[in-house]
Image (cartoon, rainbow, N blue to C red):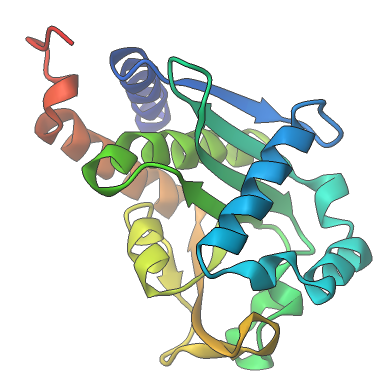
Length: 217
């Protein structure tokens, strides 16, 4: 599929142009202790401490999420962590969080994107986030994923929409162990994700000055 090759080429160009370095951490990787520590601190400082809760750790243990997940990390030229996303095969964490109307159990051939975090603000988060999600997409596709799912609040929903993910329900869902916050369960077949990701990376290629052919950065 030529779109996949184009996405991979974009990811290489973006990483090189922005001096970013990405890795896919397998379960049990030595770097996970640092990454998980940074994530726990981020959740606490950003009003999402519920992600560190006993209930979430119990759900993780029951589903074996950490033991089955890969984490994509993106670091800057100094080695600082700037973006992450977790990639998990079924059963998903979100399946244990959302009510039946989300129909999360219908996507057993999909992979879940979760814990999407960027330590950059504003326009500076665009490339690291695109890099993390693009690599996660290619990883999922290489492992035979039929599609991708994600559980997101409205701001993150807009990010996932750039990769083609859409809600499976009409109104926001309440997630009790996340302070009854409003969430959206999102899904897209892998072919739709590839098409959307290709369109988005083409857009970035033409609109981000750092990626312009004449850029001297």
